[in-house]
Amino acid sequence: MTEEYRTESDTLGPVKIPKDALWGPQTERSRHNFPTGQLMPLPIIRALLQIKKAAAEANLELGAEPQNKAQAINEAIDHLFTLSDVQLQKDFPLHVYQTGSGTQTNMNTNEVVANEAMKLHPDLTILPNDDVNRGQSSNDTFPTAMNLVAVQALDQLEPAVQHLIDELVAKEKQYWKTVKVGRTHLQDATPLTFGQELSGYIAALKHDLNYLQQLKPTLYELAIGGTAVGTGLNAPTGMPEQIAAKLSQVYGHHFTVHTNKFFGLANHSGLNVIHGALKALAADAFKLAQDLRFLASGPRAGLRELKLPANEPGSSIMPGKVNPTQAEAVTMAALRVFGNDTTITMASSQGNFEMNVYKPVIIAVFLESADLLTGTLRNFADKAVHGMTVNADRMNALLDHSLMTVTALSPHLGYHTAAQIAQLADREGLTLRQAALKSGKVSAEQYDQWIDYMKMTRVDQDQPEE
Image 1 (cartoon, rainbow, N blue to C red):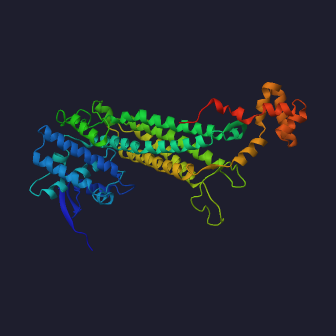
Image 2: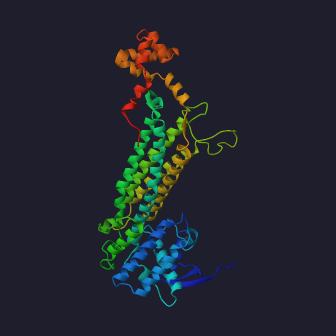
Image 3: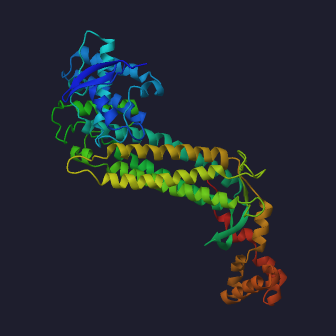
């Protein structure tokens, strides 16, 4: 069936638009000019709608917008907010890979709001540029939306990180005095407890969470009010401050427009530096997941100090095989974040003079990184760490066969003699105890007194996380 069209004109001429589409000519042009890649994330669309609503209210309060038009714009936006993601997406068909300022998505928003407002109020003429976009530019609304959605993404990520910390802390307490062999350089080292080992991962994640929380306020500085190049041309006096106040109420953070607008349009340093913290979190999560899956390797031919939950069959050909899939998901997500960080770093350095023109890709990959970490870390906490148990017998066996507990003999016999005992054990396939007694340097009573695994961990000097 042939689709019906209507014809509208913009400054370049007439454009055929699907008859029932809420968008207008500029959206339709972009839809055909840039058909590649992912759609613009809906959080950006919803943030732009919030900005348009705040702007209409501010313009009304400042006498810059007639009451009937401001009210129609707000009613239209309120209706759009009631739509599901699927319903809303129909009206916002544009892709990330478009103009680098996000102008076409800003215009898409203006056109949809204007047409929706006129559907609700057929007696009014609401213009996308003159009414919905009054006192604004794509150059200040889009970076403002970028900061808003980045803050939202961090608000969702932070509890997920804390949840993983909490699950690890529970295991830390449970296994605070479970002694095992330590490892450095992939070689045996002196003993520690599994609780102590976990405490290191916990501390890393706490630092990562703290970095995010400390850096997040840099995103509270909004570009709105800068309009085209940062001068604020055509923005009524007081409008930016009112928009920031209204957005602060909506998002629950104290946003401000008291920042250099030339910086706000041309640079995205806040998103760049915070994504660096996301990269650090991803790196620490990668190491945690990697180490736990190695410690759980086996079940017969690996380290098998840990047992991870069996969430699903692991092989289409090997019956009974179970894989550390949650760890694999975390490590894959981390690699994606590493790549996204390179993208954001390069994109933040680009764009000439008064405008960074890589805005859509910056926020798209930022949101992807935050979303990947939020989901995979929460799942890892629930479906891997929560049900993780230790194989105490295996830990004890490996510890008994380790040669590096000889370190406890060093203060009594000297480094050189202790090394000779370790080398004797390794050369002749003896246990360390057997080698020590064979050396004639140590009596059985002395060995049992000096080689005390629990004392070697010094665990009693520390306390598990509260």
